[in-house]
Image (cartoon, rainbow, N blue to C red; front, top):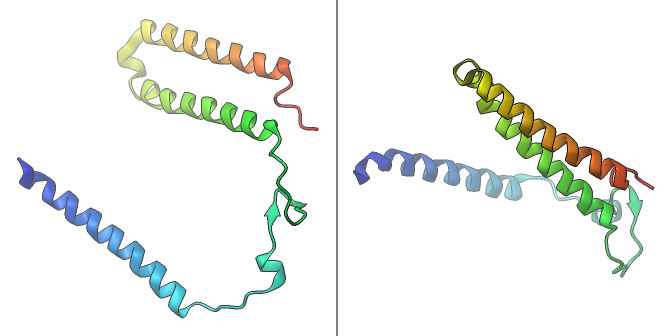
Length: 118
């Protein structure tokens, strides 16, 4: 049974080895021209003052969480679309309920002003 997984292990080791090889060769052969601009901290198009330890705005996290929720929605839509004909009307209604629940969540975050950027 375990011998069935040997080709997968070999492929994984080859892929990891190739990735490490490319990184090492790039770091050895690539140009190294550090400048002050390249070393400067860059945060969303705003200059960050040195030693600034102010917390990030909560909007970053709220947008990230909303993105993850709707990204997971798309992951669930793909298998449903593939098996759409086999699921029939029951599958269609179930997906409508699922999308309705997500739209209610979207309306909620819109109403709360999460998507408004100040």
